[in-house]
Length: 327
Image 1 (cartoon, one colour):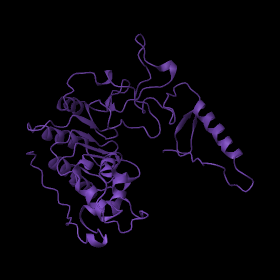
Image 2 (cartoon, one colour; image 1 turned 90 degrees about the vertical axis):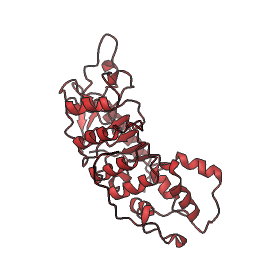
Image 3 (cartoon, one colour; image 1 turned 120 degrees about the horizontal axis):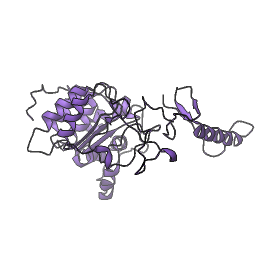
Image 4 (cartoon, one colour; image 1 turned 135 degrees about the vertical axis):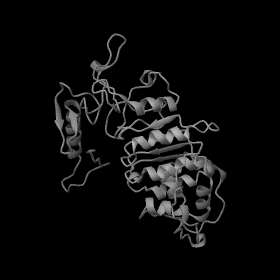
């Protein structure tokens, strides 16, 4: 691409010792590092060629499932690792996001053999500019880059890297990017990114469906069609993730724009339903999350129903439910 950046040195060695399934080096260490302690039952001594239907089904699996499948037997190991079509989209979120490092990311991307089209890393604290630089240098056909919440990736690096990447006239370049949660994005960065992505002066917010804030949905999905996830907050005029409000009285109409559409620093929102909590009764949880009064009442009612299902010995009947809070 002519970026003038130093090559990435992972220090990895080729895969060895496939006969006894001791994949200690090369790209096979991805599964051992990311799925540490996981074991695949019934991984006996299957040596046959997988059915072609299985090969088709593998294309619907995510990264975590593919890493599990490749540990079943030697045949599936080769099938999963050597098929670049399985790795054209790499999406990493919980629970793998805390484990993935620059080296592991490079190993996974190498499986695409230069054909990686979409890279999505959600809140991966160990991924840095260094690893992302290598991905961009070795995958010229990348069109989607999603790094929301990756706090070790610099916003200035993102802009300069996409500028260099999209300067290659032989390929289409990156068309969509997700950088919500990254610090330091200013007006100049935003305007240049819009131009680089081909968004121009279009109002990005005019053609997409609403994005509501709630636990597990803080960031824009990587398969959403808008070019960039952040925009200028109507209130603070900072470039951040901006959320719509699902409350009936707050919905946008032709005559009344949504006045509570803003970032979470300007307008607090319920962590469960995403509605604004301007003048609404709310409860603050022990994780400092906010729940509107309606969601809090529903939680209490649900908890009461669970308590009634517990027998005198304390054993719950049926499925158990664990209410988790994202702090």
